[in-house]
Length: 249
Length: 314
Image (cartoon, each protein chain N blue to C red):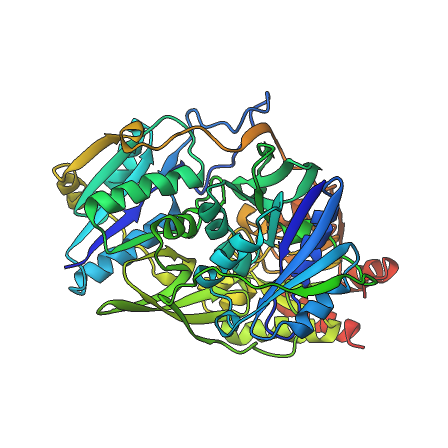
């Protein structure tokens, strides 16, 4: 039976209004609500549905991050992952290092399929899936909106700029989940209780032979330049007049 | 000198405007010499368009049957081979570039800069994080290839008037057969392209149905504008996915952006904040979209849209 690995990143919650630290060293994360990256929830949901269809035997959730990322892994276990692995590091890893760490776990676990979110909503980098696929020398299907497994291959519908693209890939492979792949399930209280008993292993990043040293040096983090405040118009006529004056219509 | 390789995005016939924007970013790198790589079944037409972009010194082409459709796994090893001797490799931050460039970077063993929005030096770039709430300046190590995707909304398209040389390159890289193209949906209409249109009309959840969303298409038609949509409108099935504007959709910078019935979640605003003029129409006067709008109108969209369409029809 197939084994599916799912990436679960701990990120600042979707609803938090992120603020930049006054000294320009990053953003404020102390005391801020943290959650599972929403795209990773979609990735996990897809893995669970594949298992529930009988097309996979096990779903393993993997997070790379600090001790506290165990909270997000418990959420993944409550959603239905069979077990979880934390690759522990306090460093802010770049996607290349995250891909190297995931590759080490993929090899250790002998995974058939890896599903991650198309991007994390903190760094918005959208790199981990293609980088892992490159290092693993396997196919990638980014921005998936439909996944169909058949035997040793899969047919994937991807969200691209022109609309929808269909490709066929051989397994094993790496997929990245887009918004409309599925709607993740809600976690119920009994599942949270059950999740506490599921296995969660902790490995050290260094033990996987992956360097946490960043390749790119962050020099400064600053807030975006605000747009200047506009004016309110009272009706369509006034709006059209204003746009005509600017030569826009 | 910075030797920059820009990977062209195209549909086999036409060079995507995103590539011309990428070239503008490359031109801002100090002492840049720019080469555009065109990988295609038959690259001639696209190569000619790339050669005409101001600032491009050279176009290299790779003609091969496996380059007919843009598959990252197939293109990446070829781009890596072409990139030998270059200090920078750029691609647009489009679905194409976001799929390809990280694969290229990983094969080269270097980090990638996503969504470069400003050039601060040959090895220094700014990029947005947290849906544009934090702008980070990154410094890449000199002496290693800088691989980056370029946030196209931050750069104008390079003008024409160039006359670069065009040369065919042969690549020895073995391309995989584990990834195969099946099909791509045909462009939905002859409407202006959302990513490059100077005017965009966007609709949100307040439209209430797919049928009502037609009002947005009608207004856009009257204005000669492209159509966009908020994530909520796309999730609800009112508009197709390729029209989504925002953090996880398209990032655009039109001259005029008209947001109708869009509340203005931060994830949407990050996709439009480079628009020159933003118009917001919403019946909720407290909606965050009004904080970024140049012109705001608090009104019921179902009353306003027909009126607006009438006064703007040419």
